[in-house]
Image (cartoon, rainbow, N blue to C red):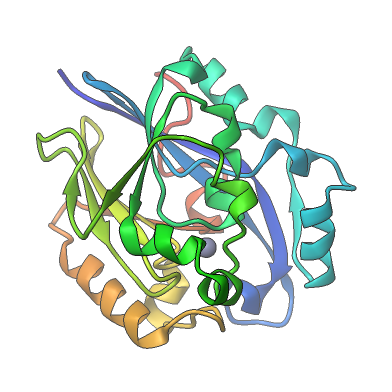
Length: 253
Ligand SMILES: [Zn+2]
């Protein structure tokens, strides 16, 4: 049985171009995607978008972001719950959430999928509970420490044991960042997440200040080397991949 892959946009960032590793002085709008994977053995998400509280302009974390020149627009139709309902998937049925990393825009929506097991690189999860690392890399526990069962993995991990959904470590953006390779009816996709924000960064290699640039370069080189002739790289926050013609379908054909 084929597996399904859907790309959902859970709000938008508004930031200086440099904040997204892009050239120019202006501001850019960049999507916050997450992904729905329908496998015969269960539904998995790759990342989980923003917390629903961010739809409230007075949300405390949102105010903190604004003080750092980053803003978010996020409506009720953008939540994980709304996207799953549109796909006719009960959020309670989500079996796994593979987290690329623990940033608020990737783990923040976890409160909407109470029965999921989180699949996280061990070193990422440990960093989230380490006082110094969690500060340096912005990993507040309020977004991910909600009592879900957690499966900690070390390095590559084949989620369903059939080679179709494989976690690939891509450390550097945060201590235990991971990407995932999906082999679906749509072809081969590597969901890069924040190992590379967009296609421009893949060339220019401009990474966030807090990240480990040597590790990010090595991870990105490894991910790019995994490409086969038909592989599509889906970057973490790439406006060019989620505009008028999104790179992945968001709804059933
Ligand atoms: Zn991030």
